[in-house]
Length: 101
Image (cartoon, rainbow, N blue to C red; front, side):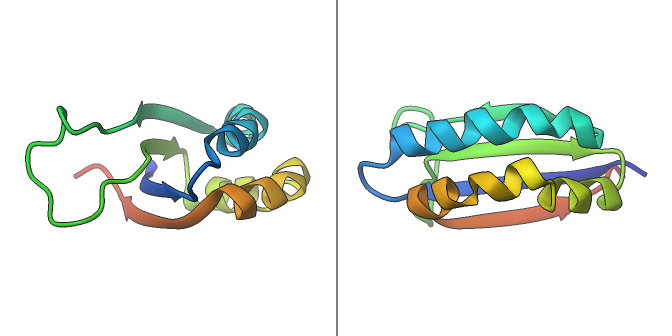
């Protein structure tokens, strides 16, 4: 069963370049773990219709063939090596898990 994740990513002030470095290192690893980035959005004031939460810096829609593949991605040694960049750039992430109905 396909496994989906929606991530709302909130970055620290003035850390966009560090966030980009982290993304450049970890996004290519998705395919190695049967994952795909289906959608990557940076919301703006003109694209938000309604909100009751702080808008995230980015929104990602990810797909994995299984939750086990996702868990392998999380523990990938190359991803683990990039975590200091993540810790520097991101102050919080809100993750929603789902499946096709």
